[in-house]
Image (cartoon, rainbow, N blue to C red; front, top):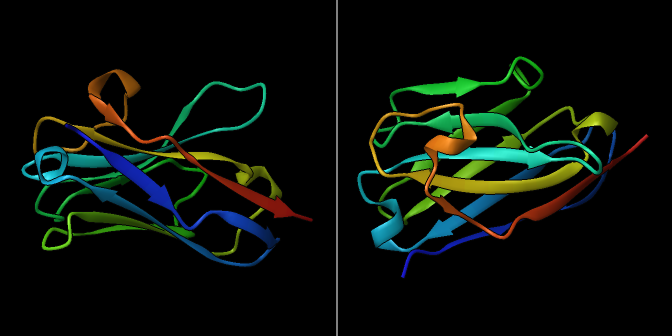
Length: 124
C-alpha cells in the first residue's frame, strides 16, 4: 500500500533551521517525482518545492528560494526538505507528496500520494 510518512517538524525561532524527512514505501517512491507542499491555518495548500526521480531537476516557490533545499536518497526511499532562515510566515503543516511520473510538478492535482503532514511553527 502506498505510504508517505513525514517527520522532523517542530517549533523553532525565526532565523532557525529544520530538516523534514519523508519516508516512502518502495511502491510510492520508485520512479516517482516528489514534492513538498504546505498549508497554513485558514489558507489553501500551496506548493513549496519538488524534485525529479533522478534528483537532477527541482523547482521552488519564490517564497522559499535560497532558504529551502529539497533532496532525495533513492536508496533509502526518502526525500528531505532542509529549511534555513525560517520566518514566521513559514508556519504551516508541511505535506510530502508523490506523483506517478519522474518529472516534478507544482500543481497539487499532479500528485497521487500524500502523507499525513508535519507541523512547523516558527516563532518571532
